Length: 129
Image 1 (spheres, helix red, strand yellow):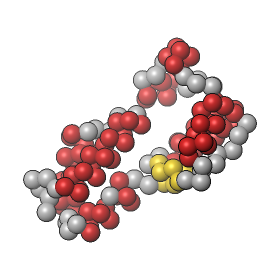
Image 2 (image 1 turned 180 degrees about the vertical axis):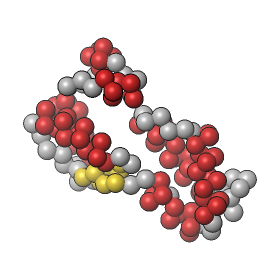
Image 3 (image 1 turned 90 degrees about the horizontal axis):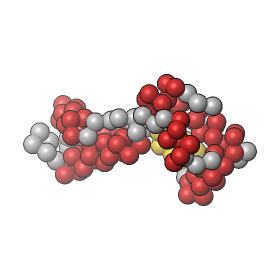
């Protein structure tokens, strides 16, 4: 099933998928292999679970992991509070993170975005404590 809207969003063409992609069974098997018994965090679980269900249904497998909704505020805000960041400084850190490492709705860039925010909160910046 090809979704032209997903192609626009992710910037991956059907041709690229055919050339560089992997069959659903291979993807599902590998995900189960490395994620078995773990929680997979998602900032958009409805979308992610929908696509995972399509992959796993096509593969004839069930996920061996769970998907949990989260976002930066759930994972990083407690660290910021523990380190003495006030809410205005935390908002400024998130804005600086957006500037340094914008989200692009691509896994690598979005993971980098969270890593940059974690780094800023952990190590401070000009506006932090």
